[in-house]
Length: 68
Image (spheres, rainbow, N blue to C red):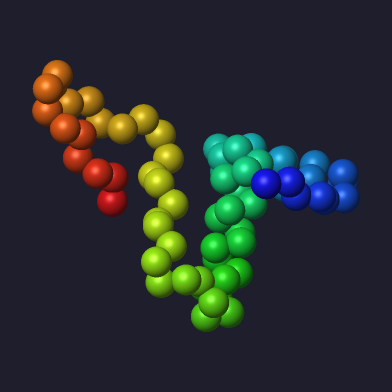
């Protein structure tokens, strides 16, 4: 998906994302989801945003527990 943004807006988002240890893409998704939720328009079937960071280690052969 292509998203056109004013370069100054993109730079501000990228700086904010860096402050929050997120990618610019993750920051945009976070902000859009928050705006949709506040407006009562977030679809009920929308998957939650995955947790940041590395998943916990699990012994080989055992499935990883879902983050949540």
